[in-house]
Figure 1 (spheres, one colour):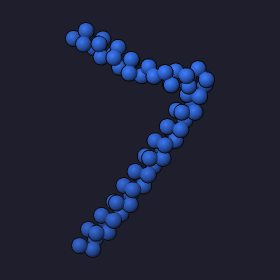
Figure 2 (cartoon, rainbow, N blue to C red):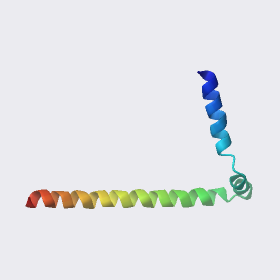
Figure 3 (tube, rainbow, N blue to C red):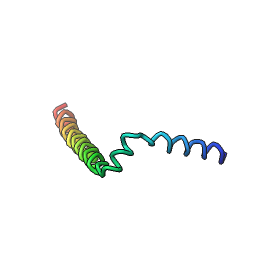
Figure 4 (cartoon, rainbow, N blue to C red):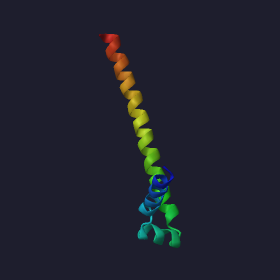
Length: 66
């Protein structure tokens, strides 16, 4: 069981060894990349939250009329 876990962790660590990301880390630009990704994710979750609220209002309106 421990060997399987070690193999998984080593392969998972190797998956994230991307030369471009290493260059961004060296140049200090990785923070810009992470910041942009966070802004996009936050925007996406706000969009989903607002859509959920709108759908709930429409469902309540449909149930009220029907």
